[in-house]
Length: 381
Image (cartoon, rainbow, N blue to C red; front, side, top):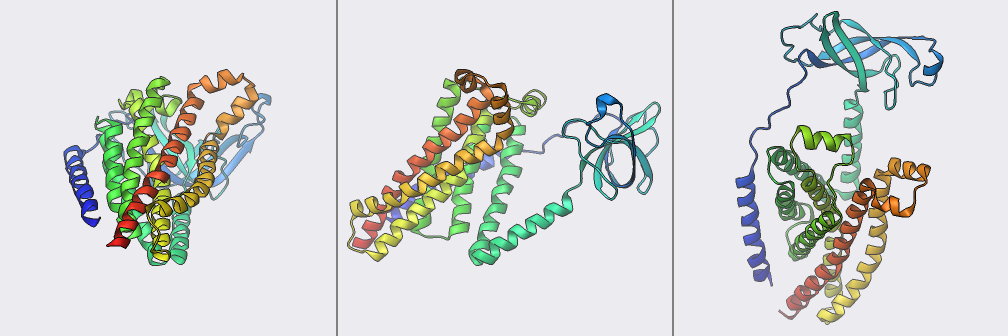
């Protein structure tokens, strides 16, 4: 059985590596910034609030100005009309940010500003808080929790996570920006992640190999189902300002990007299910050497059904949580059910969750059957 696994995996690995070499993206050209514009970081040293007019009474920070001490400046090409240069350590006056989504600021807050040269001088606006330090603390707490519980397995899982992000940020996304097909980049990147990260995270062995084969087969099925759903429902992938900007300004195929997102989003859950099923079959075979393929499959399938029942709920809740503002808007507008399911924004999320769930369900019998055949054959040998 190990020989048959190698017969399947080695060509697949070679094809994946060759595809990555051929599709490896070059340097991504950055979008030109507005001449005279740039970013700066600073710390709020004072806030001067004034009474708002009646129509602005409910604004986020009230009305008035704040003084911000510049701590870092992003160099930009200011063009011909530079205005006054921005100096680290200088204090600048900004209007208190207001409007939907505006950051609430107070003295001592570290903020991110945009600045722009104008005929009357350089203007500054606070656009967000700085979160770098807090995010590093959260990342450290996450890593410590993983390592404290998982020990060496936790270390390998963190290494696998780092490799996954490296593939996404250095291969998949730059390739899409370079004009390659998003679904092709997603499939090749996902195949590399499966072939490398699963061995790194779970160790080299038949349990991981079987889980890997089950994941790849289920991922291919998920991609095919996603394509059929997107084509059949005439989804465009353009549902908000961000997707419009990505499609128009960056020239990305948004329908392909939608498919790529479904494939990549399904990968993590498939990993969970296939490894669980493969390990379950292996433990059953070890505890009961006399079990044949059918007995192993039926016993492990019962575990898989219980696992699937909870994982499906997890998937639906995850998608519902990510689209909660949309759900609030739908309930507030009180449309008919027909209008709700026909709306592209909601239809897109339904397709994501439904396709991922179908792929997940298919992964259980596929992986369980393969694991049962392998375990029974190894027991006879």
